[in-house]
Image 1: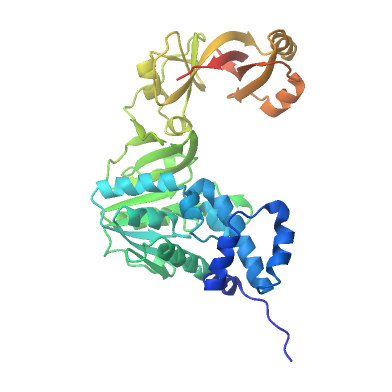
Image 2: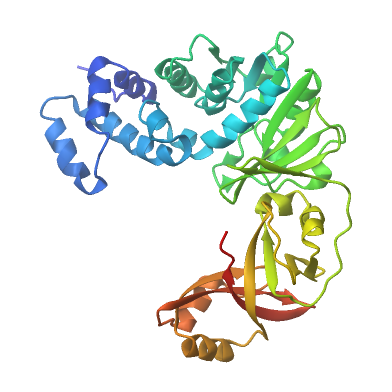
Length: 397
């Protein structure tokens, strides 16, 4: 008698789509990782062991996905480990889809669609989507997600090599190349799968296109005819997008959830000046887009150092593009003096920031041995070329 074969990942996933599988997933919505073994033992009394293992694994993925997709969607959707890791955050996907809809997009060829996060956002914006991926399991998950959210009439999933897709019937091409490999993140755009050069050529065949890339992309890698937009969400830089068919050569930083957008005007960086009463920390998208000068202009601010992206001013002015701190102390870096000052002021809680400093915040925190009921912000940086520590407080909005 031949030995029984283990279920393939596709078989395990298919079992989750059955009535029994869906019921198990509903049962596992509030799975406690600490009780996982006991839960698995209990469920295996009434369900096949393979199905229980698949359901517990999917329950874990759904819990992780809540941070990106929100509970309402995450607990209806299906995921793969790579899908949770690489999917676009829902808020970012919705912003991008809304922008495409405002540009008049009616249909999108979504190449490298993954588990369908972007396709879902596009369909919710009323756009018809061809979602393409070469991995059969990933395509099955994308199909299941379209059905689960009631968007399958607008989303066609096709399992194919993206290089074989005729994008002519679609008014927009969207490409999200894989930027992770066996050794982690891929930083060379030509090592993406597919390479950035291929994605750019695909973009040039359509009336408009959007290419999602890593926010660390070198500016010199951006084609002249593309608009480059860096997007942050909640202060974290999430991605860069190369837009074709919009504003060639434009550079933009967009901050979510507010939607505030800063566009390049070719301003030179303001000159460096002594640290004033206020320090402004530009949002990461502003820094990545090289728009610190545009953020500094309405603040009447200068840089604390020609090479450091901190803005300083003697006036407090509102801005959506930077976080403001009121500075109480500007001191040459000296660990002994810093410890004494914090002890004198009863500082037990400190937010430690760094830019242009070799000191690691967590190592410094261990050495400071903070005690007390008060709090402060410590900024390790360079000012006028010298290692400097700034102490202050966040400005309350």
